[in-house]
Amino acid sequence: MNERPMTATMNADGRQRTRTALFLAVAMAATVGSALGFQHIGGYIPCHLCLEQRTPYYIGVPLMVLAAIASTLSAPAWLTRGLLVIGGLLMLYGLYLGVYHSGVEWGWWQGPADCTAGAGPVDTGGKGVLDALDKFVPPSCDKAALRILGLSLAGWNAIASLILAAVAFRGAFSRD
Image 1 (cartoon, rainbow, N blue to C red):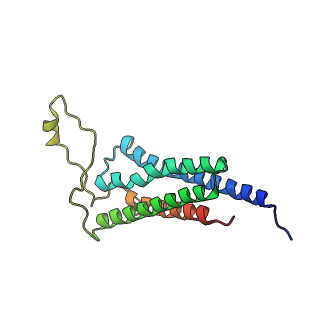
Image 2 (cartoon, rainbow, N blue to C red):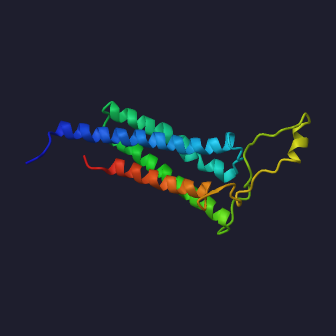
Image 3 (tube, rainbow, N blue to C red):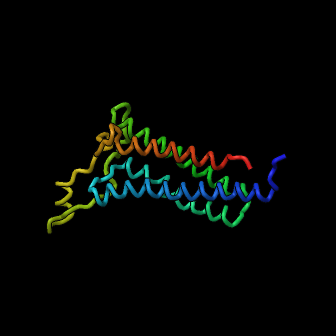
């Protein structure tokens, strides 16, 4: 038969899990980095839900780096697989948040009551912060700041999260 020795199979599968974890770390960092770029370079002030959608990425990137390190160091396969599953679950949560925020933007359901920007640059113009607050109106979660090909950034986040979840679960449950 055409069977590879057990050590060769484990090494090949371990390399595949390492590549998967590295891909996920880079893709997650690029996704949240894009959001940060829209905020800090493009001047789009995020609403409460926008900021919340970043959390799975902030947690997921270091976990995927840890998964890649564990796989590279030949840690038990269950550890790398477990970290990939956690990454997949984080991205499913990101999918939920993206769909929820998109639904709020399209008026399909109500958003949270505290749907305002968490933080943004405030130009006080030499006056006090309280005077500037009268002029500063944070964005609402029900208004898409930008639509690209008909989808808001929340919609694109939902698509990215779905793809990244699929990659993570495929890497976690691939055969040894």
